[in-house]
Length: 611
Image 1 (cartoon, rainbow, N blue to C red):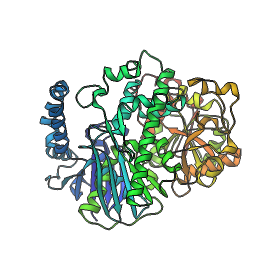
Image 2: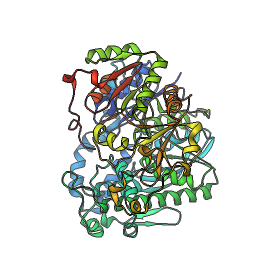
Image 3: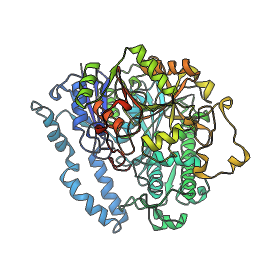
Image 4: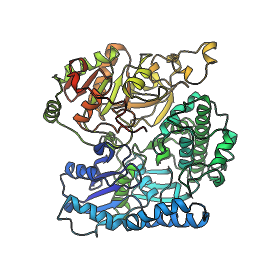
């Protein structure tokens, strides 16, 4: 039995995973353990967890692989400085001490950190380094259900590459084309995230969620920043950006082009201007991704597409690629960002370096992305007692029945079951649930539970067999990475007066039979649920359907704004007591907020740094 430990760290979303004979055993992000969102530090806790889950000591691991090559990254830093000198000296001077002290000699750094897990770990000879974009591509292709696929990876930047095309067949994978830094679709999107006052490498979801409230009236101005070719390749005009040399994403020339300075998130509200900016950059992103997809379909004539890299989390763009029917099939890595690099690096080492055969799993090689921690009933009850929780333990059937009843009464429920998800989406393991038929649910969950902006959309979880009756899509979407339109039969048309409304005023208009998950443009980010990936969640939605005729429930991640998704029963209880959640269902235990000790309430409104 050959075991491989994959690690991603030191930029954002540090993570670890373990393979046994090429099978994915466990994977988790460090943020879930440290409670620091997007934690970039060495993933000590995540490594401890995956080792424990795999029942291995570090000294028993055969190979350890890091998700990128630090020397190539350092080369980019130096060459960028030389190309732009003397501009950028300040950021260069800030970066150098850390690189020279730690990052450049990462093998030594990793070895010293790894020794802390196991005193019997003696040699660094089993440490390997993958290429950043190869790690992304491998994470998307090797777990996919395709024998052959073309893989499109787009993110901020790895070592040099920002966008790559690879071709995978059986156990082989080869990068064919690259676009290099400073030309980056991920960094372009992040520049607009920064410009609209959201946090880079965190607030990109908000920009995407804001886009439907605006009109893409700045499209032509954005095209002064980026030259897009017919095949989707592009070049960015560096005169408007500061990320290559400075400490900010954009500069004054960028501000002057659009006519406003960067929004101050603490003192300035989001206006129609920011919504139109969001709509414009989202449209450009979709245009580039669609053009790239068309070009690579034509060039390689392969019918399957895999997507990875941070841009692959743009589920609206993914939905547009699907709708255009460019490829017959699409598969997207659920941990598409840097966290998934730990998994891809391990899979690349297993198949490419070790030359091991690949068995294609048509069900789900990612185990539904439920690859994290889990707690048995005894552990759950012990932990709940230790935090002073008042709970009732029910039989399984009673638990499902009671929870579905509470959902139909418009209660907001924390749902903590089975293994934690790997990647940024809650998929029914660590979720907050609600009734999608309620026209108050979206606003209430955002403002009273998540403590975040009212415009942020929620996702529907739907029984796979009912999908095409409710949405204009009929493909599996287990990881909530595809956006689709609401089925025409379920839509509620707007009146002429309602159509004239602008921006956030559009939010409170009922657009469908499931308003809590219908975005202002009649779309939704869909998660399909089947019995074989998440039996308990499937049973709950089925029981809700039995009671209400609706096979859909609201699913959002179990956390508040700025907090990582909950990991342990204690995290879940703290979040429950710090928000206006009505009930918590954890294992077979059910907790009623009204029966909890009021002294255990927490103030979660200021608990976490804003994301």
